[in-house]
Length: 91
Image (cartoon, rainbow, N blue to C red; front, top):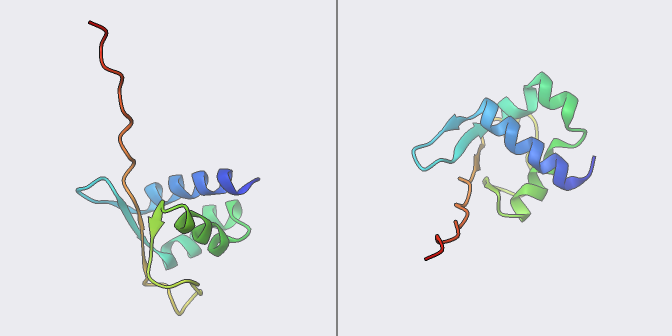
């Protein structure tokens, strides 16, 4: 699985495990993600996938490196999807 595929799967898992916010974003703690059995089976390197998604500005969290136990309560926020422009109807 390549990085792009893993980032897309991460977005799905954050939506599944997280809480939807009023602005369309989702929040989940690192501990919830890390300790989820399904995530453990999907992601060989969850922290690496999180960092890749953060570099692509798809999500935010405090710090650079998240560690199990120490950072279990760190909130990860998946940004809301950007609206796609719809073409104007032809006159």
